[in-house]
Image (cartoon, rainbow, N blue to C red; front, side, top):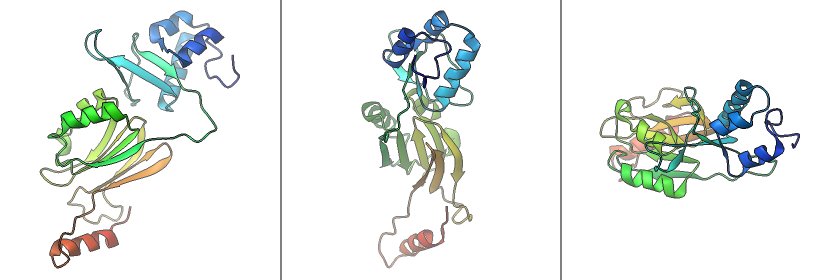
Length: 223
């Protein structure tokens, strides 16, 4: 067993290699465990939270496709969940971060979910969600393997961050309280980086009040 492996106390080398390559079910992990299974499960949760353990689950019947389960504080492991460990590396890790003015997230749900499944970005920043927080499609996005944080309003504006990794220290709106009546900015810590998703006012014609609003927005807003 390699010394840097966090599972060396509980798994033989051949089983750890399976965990790295094909993956192991939780029930298989229990069968192969040498020592305290509860301690092994604790380590699984820790690695899952840190983004090194990938958890996949079938939602619905056994024929359904397995989808990645994001870590949440309320998350739990099920016997048939497939676990796969990704070894940490000192090399630069490449992530895929995307942004999309969706112009009403509920109207674009099918397109959004298909796009997420096809491209699997690590993070997607969305603008113009045009939905109040109570009606944001949290469940549908979770089924696609993404955690979501958001701030919105009916018909106008609205921003959200979707992520395959945990999001922490979420902030909604500007730090100085500017333009609090409009849902145009949200930020969160992702992989140790503060991501800021902003829906900047369009401004339109330079002779209009909307353009003045845009200039004020850029000058007065502070994250």
